[in-house]
Image (cartoon, rainbow, N blue to C red; front, side, top):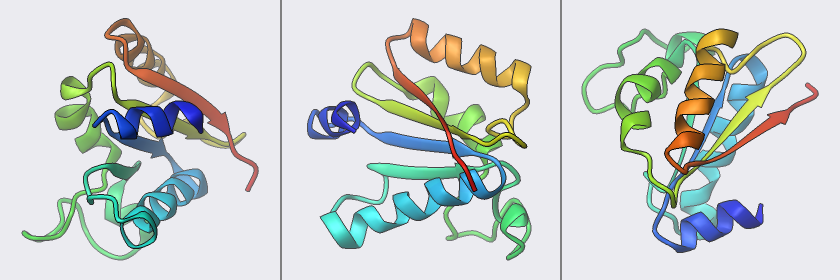
Length: 126
């Protein structure tokens, strides 16, 4: 928590990645930051494997104007731009990895850590 707060107060971002119920929990926490703390929508973001389809409320990619939440989009577009002042929290359960696959997830975590991005892997009981 202290690391995330430090990143955000330094102008960085917090990203939650997760599959299944763990991903939904990250998405919910991210969505609460704007109304609760006055954060910008891009300060804290949740990414769910399968995106809106995983939530059962649409298709991916979403229609224009709807924010993208697919973990695959995070990997393709957001991960490259992460800096030392950013943090990624990977949420996993006994049943899921974050959603990108265990081998790809391990490689993604290693690549982010090599660039100095703060990474935490959190096991969630749902």
